[in-house]
Length: 297
Ligand SMILES: [Zn+2]
Image 1 (cartoon, rainbow, N blue to C red):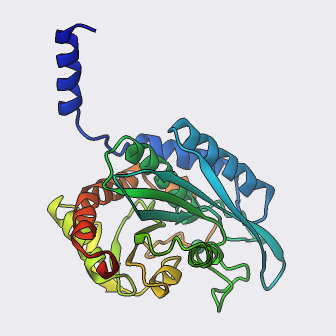
Image 2: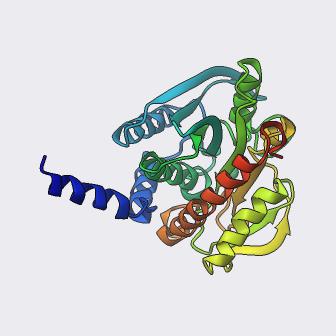
């Protein structure tokens, strides 16, 4: 290689902007997932969903590992699978980006979960591509959770958040919990009428960073400065002492209805959340780097 070419390549490397979240790609993932149809835990369709997720991660240069277990739910025994893909960073400690990819089981109507189950998985796939190309301060883990939804019609007791509870139990047992410095949970972010409130169960400093970043990007019409209280996959992490934030729009007209289809969601909503999460990530990294290892909370 000539010296001039080497200099040119170096200059390109220095000036190439960080990879951006591309809502068109996320939208295509969402379309593919919805096309699979209803994707409840234990179904052939959710196995097909996993195949899609694995293939897309592989296309981004990532290998998915599986956490497989059999869960006794109030109505049946279900094989569940979390998918985990690791993107090494400068440090071994990790930030987990998680979301569920199962859809709620309905027998009385066809539920394809465009926002509820689809948007989180589609978002994480595109985020994985972006983060793989980024220089990350901490190791990043992309976590696709199974079994978020209750098996029975109503959300009650321990008949929900199966995947997140399994993940945290496993991390406690294998000693990897100590290296888990923060969780960013993504859930139901597809609503074309996006308005997300601050969840009071989430860790305040982490919520502040994200909502401030949204304000800085003038996206506070979507990241609304109001409070709500959410039970979701972040609760097992919070109970284990992991700073966690849930980014969710539960104010969704089509929630848990046959109308949670592509018509009710938009690529713009995925872009908004992608821009805010990626904008906040350096701030989260700085905060975690500044905190003594055991005092990151
Ligand atoms: Zn749901």
